[in-house]
Image (cartoon, rainbow, N blue to C red):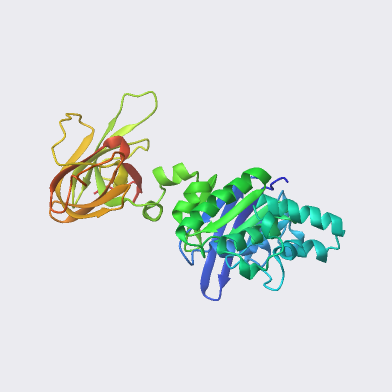
Length: 380
């Protein structure tokens, strides 16, 4: 099977006074695993339903391989959908659920048998063909739904939060299986989720949405390391985010254009950060530093590097999770900074940093990131 290109241009949709989509434009490549990520009510499911043909937009365009599909009914779009609630027929066996669409189209019995067995093998359910769906686990039901959607050989598979009803461990296992299925069949997957880890784990690219708008489109690495807005920085993983003002800017002596910016953060003080964007002194910006990029120690680091940001504080709350500990460190007696320390080695005596310890936190200028300029050109 071959995946199709999907292009969405200036798509808008309102339900009464509620604006679900606001001139959304996206280009999804054939064979791509593309995720629509955002909180509940951001418009991602509405967008999926419009692509599927279950909703009509107020304006805009949806093309698949260059052809406008908005005038077409769902069954003529070469698109199939896997729903959150599986939507299986409880009175039919696994085999009959998967075979249903082929029987409706009057395929020969022998061909139906071969194709159903092929897709049950793809989703690892060969031994469950004659079971009723109420005898299956949640993960098995989801596999039946995926096989039923794929047997029609669509060019695009739409997945509407397909794993949200599963427990955490099963969800992670199914996510890996879903990614493997995508690699085997090569069609376009458009995956709706509110779970950042799901999107980061399997996507080729992600569109982060909020309040009917697409805020950023990029690879998981781009979205996590270089968030385009404050919302993206907060929504993807954990971060420490501050409003700041640029105090000074120095061009670095490197082959590529890069600047060292000194920022003033009102509740924290002066810090340094590198950026490829030219920023003038006095400009207001947002600054973010991820918790895992911060080093926490009980002893003051001996480094004399000028690009290291160093603060002293007190552990306000340590949260031990086995593979890591998250610390909330109170700095300047008022601001809490989140720090994550990975436990890569075995420790007989338990964590060496505990509640109320005085600690030092530090990070390199290259590990912070200026999310964006608050008011370009404005000086303070």
